Length: 332
Image (tube, rainbow, N blue to C red; front, side, top):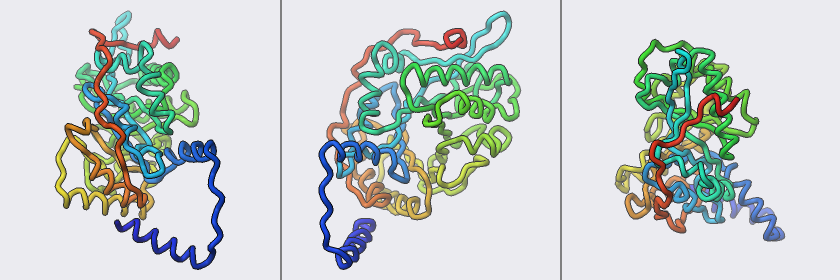
């Protein structure tokens, strides 16, 4: 209740200065204001959804007291980096597995992505390796160019709000290419509209040898590697307004004291000007109910409460054997 007590004192002071009552917003104005506020809250709440078994619409069911969503960003976890060999040349591809394909293809975006966006939530596609020997840290300049074009194409094709990067599971089979990760980020930023987002999970090869300050300055948000409060920004060029010092695994159980601690840390994050708070692996509400945790964080960060209008939406789309692959031939 620390935020609420602070705001109560502020409101009493304001009331002493003036007793003039503001005119209520018209219904359409209020709706537009709510949509704007949904993404403009700071620190922003990011929720990763494991699309192998959880419906992403559940992330939009958690609402602040004015009806705007608790989440500012939803990351679809995850698409994969694969490779193909054409004429003896290795080229990167983007792979949607059997469970993710119909979230985006065959009308999936209208059913599972657009409703989140209509609430003011930005929806990003997370990209990570898949034991294919190729990843964010070992692409040459030609491969980086091809992969950036594929990602920009996917963002446009599916009406997404950007790309999130996570350097895991690549199983690198060739030497790393210094600066590869940053090169992909730089090229992608140049190919996407300015309002599209790029995020990076602070793990794997995302240090100075891979992302220099120029590329780091193009990233919208960097998320710490699972910590209650880690202020150590590990990517050059990233300021605290673009950094999440808190990263929570929602697949775990949390004691009351741990939940209260996260609330305290959310307050510190807001007071110290950090840009985001990351939540990973949203479960259905009946499996791992996050409402107490979300309330503690919302109170600490915003002086707000959170309610849930469902949270148990099922995985109701059909799987596509073999998944779906996007190659540079689809782009050009």
